[in-house]
Length: 333
Length: 237
Image 1 (cartoon, rainbow over the protein chains, first blue to last red):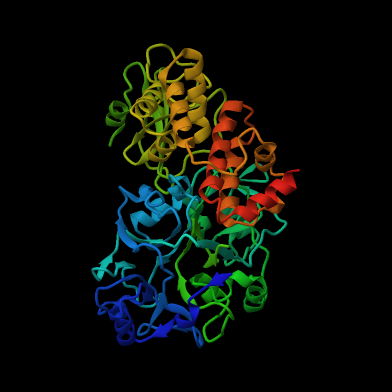
Image 2 (cartoon, rainbow over the protein chains, first blue to last red):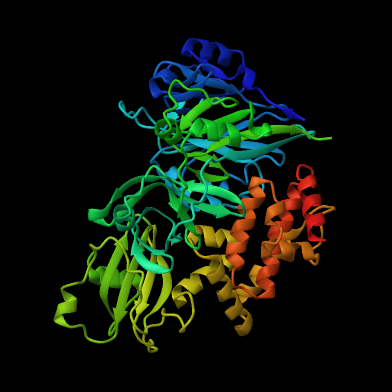
């Protein structure tokens, strides 16, 4: 049996959010940095982002905040801040039974470290870990921030994580919905874990990715996709600069991994709703990618079964792009 | 930093000198080509940093060793011919690390750090550290003993219904035979990492370390992933 709290998860004014905070429940709050600025300290974790899938559909708002009550029920959740020096402890600090919600400020050193080294952290994959990357309005850039709501403090170069224990009869499961899959094209390999790539091997032959994308007039809204034992994980292309031999990415590629460009998707909303599994529908905690929001024109359109922030990167154990992440809490027999 | 200062930082001394250095800030990597042959004037003019991206292709007979990190950058030392005994930090032909780096790894392991922690902190590849361990096994160094004891300690776990390491389910899981039966995202990601690490590796001891890692995953998640494990066991039969 699944339990969830999405019925109470929605966009609201900062005043309404402040009222919820004063009620004492544990909350995850996403909003433009200015909208979060006046929220009181309390039991909440947050991050800056002004793009949402709200109760009325896709919405860009610098005034509203998205509030999600968090599943709790065991011992008290613990909020911790992580700098570069102790981020490697993230998974070890997680509860034996429960989950960890992580928020990373975009373009920060912790973001970069988690992206490249997260898969190697001690206890990674052993305990449920999900989260998102805080960002900004693309036309009104304010520094991205994770928010330690217990002190109402904005952190631009530290991550915040809420470690939430669950009762013994409950179990958190994390899943993803990725409508992209590998196309049948060339296999691309990279020499290092990096956000910025150029030299690579394409079908085993030395090549330059920026030149490859230019020569084939590739639609760079399509991500690079790798297959992880049947799960497709994306790395989105930020910018290709063939004159500099460089392609910038929104997440790092990894060595010893086969990438292919994604197969084009004509109808994002239709494909998404078809791909959303029952356990992901109206689940306790969800986020989606701002690139899906922008590339698929989701503003004003509704994706049934999902509401939450549209973020600068999603975390389902490791950093993902152009992917919806959800967490469902299952009751054990 | 000029080439002379970089030579000092790397521990180079005459007759060895840097021919060329290339940095890649995006992947935090510096590649340094060294030689004990007098460089031509043309080569001298090419000294120093500036190029952003290291070459993928190696020259004829060129060997590469991972050296101690330079700040937050991983450092790779390239040499085009077999090193003489005058440069103590270069590793043996075929070794993944320079001697200086091997010593650093050994000291960390000797102080009680797990091999995973060492790989994470120094940004090392698991297979390379394992190769160092194998050398240690042959030569009676402390690295091998330390790694083995760390792994054994990590395995300690309460009574469980998860199959023992000898069960064929682990072989089939790592071989990819059961990928179709796996539903849990975290297991797929973990297994993918293990399969990559064990690709082309026949060393039974190294495989056992990774099997322990997989088994620990199931022990830790036994209640929630009981169905997953039952499905895998059924598929393995």
